[in-house]
Length: 260
Image (cartoon, rainbow, N blue to C red; front, side, top):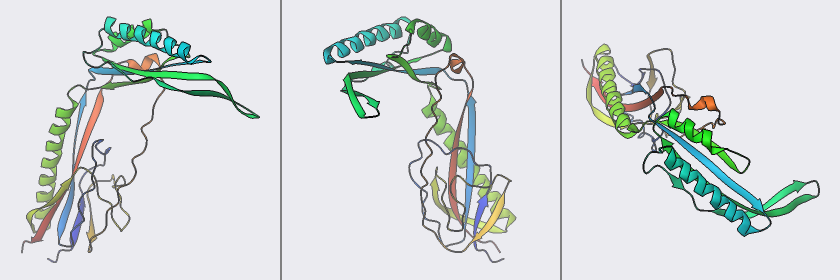
């Protein structure tokens, strides 16, 4: 059986791993299989991270600074009182600059704006709810983001990558056997999908099961820009605990030869 380079679409495409930074190596011009492995896990969040923005505008810069520092001290006290996770509380430096109101004739100076961002995490939604109930948010003290997370996410992603890699080996062996081919070795492995000159790009893999496409030449790879993560406004309902799904993908290229 004559073999051209073969591309295997072996599973459904999920969200690319957030930490994937590098594109896979160039597709070889030798006969090969490109397989995708996917592993996912659903976990309950055990971290609830809250970021706040404190801001004051005043003609007197020192007055604005003093008000922001007063609010920051109160927020830090509330973090401690409501059991923020040790080491999670962070306070940025003060940001000071001119503030303007925009009118038809142009910008009008209204004073100096002083702002500061604070962040902290809680181990339960109940602890965060208690913090928010005592916060008394206002125009000058706002919740800018709230995100659930998992404290052992690094170890979890490492485990999922291992499972996804094992799946690529299994898929490659199954396809090679089906075509009467023999796997000669691993050419490259990456957690970012390659893109191809014939129109299939990262993020656009088919979702209708396994497919096979012939490929006869190598291509240059282009990394597509990542879409911005949406930021939902804070609501009390958003802090209710719900499961988080983590997904890891691995793309492996195996060199093959005719087994006959």
